[in-house]
Image 1 (tube, rainbow, N blue to C red):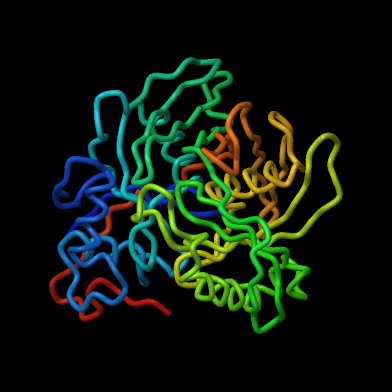
Image 2 (cartoon, rainbow, N blue to C red):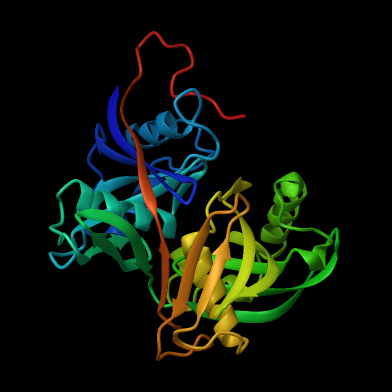
Amino acid sequence: MRVSTVDYHTAGEPFRIVLDGVPGIPGDTVAERRAIAIGAGGSATAPRPSELDAVRQLLVREPRGHAGMYGGFLVPPDDEEAHLGVLFWHKDGYSTACGHGTIALGAWAVDSGLVEAPEDGVARVRIDVPSGRVTALVHRAGGRTTGVTFRNVPSRVSALKLPVTTSRGTVEVAVAHSGACYASVSAAALGLAVEPAQLPELTAVGREIRELLADSEAVAHPTDARLSGVYGVVLYDELPSVGRWLNQRNVTVFADGQIDRSPCGSGTSARLAVLAAEGRLAPGQELRHESVIGTVFTGRVLAGGDPLDEGVVTEVTGTAHRTGEHTFVLESADELGTGFLL
């Protein structure tokens, strides 16, 4: 096995773009390809991975990756209106959305010449993902990419004050669908703070909340069952406002206990929708969203739409930087095979 990738990080969160070495993935749409990939062995419990999932495992597991690795397989878009499609993956399988990955893909599409871009101005990169079509607005100055704005599918709030009884007491949880389903809860309400030293406790309660909400009607997507179920739990701290910005810090616990090093792109979309539904964030007003490592996304809700009905369109802005180009190999005599997770 030989697989070529180019790696980026978006605000500290890795994103591994697979350029070569992936078997063909059948399906007429990106969403259908994801469903086929999962059915062919794209889960942590599959006893024998498919050829495709063996590539995912090779790239996300040690010694070539790690339990916090994230990436995507490039696939054809749903139609000619988009530039590319992508299947997002992590240590446990395939996700329906990934904001930080969309930001990295936008930067890569321009950096690689796949999409033409001006020396100064904005290039639009349209990307088909399992939850729909998203756009990366790639900002350019002096021939360099200076930032990327991720315009997501509409984000809709299904619950604002849902009581959930955890091992740390009963808390109120907000649930929003923003390409994936996110539950958000104040860390202070759980007796915690979003700090690196408290990551074990934050991870444990994030996994607990995800499990407790598994059967809740609020986590069911209204039109597409493939998007149902809590993907991530956003634990946030309120911070003093910075100028005209609302200011929060968060850590998102997603999949089976994975920690987002960035402020989480689609999770930020969910938070924007919740804040709009609470009347705390007006259209155009900006949220400064800080991660557990101190990196920052800024986000806003565009005018029009209702977060409690059809949803609102959000924009999340951050930076992505290339970290390396790799050719990974799996020798036939390697006793570890596609690797291991700790």
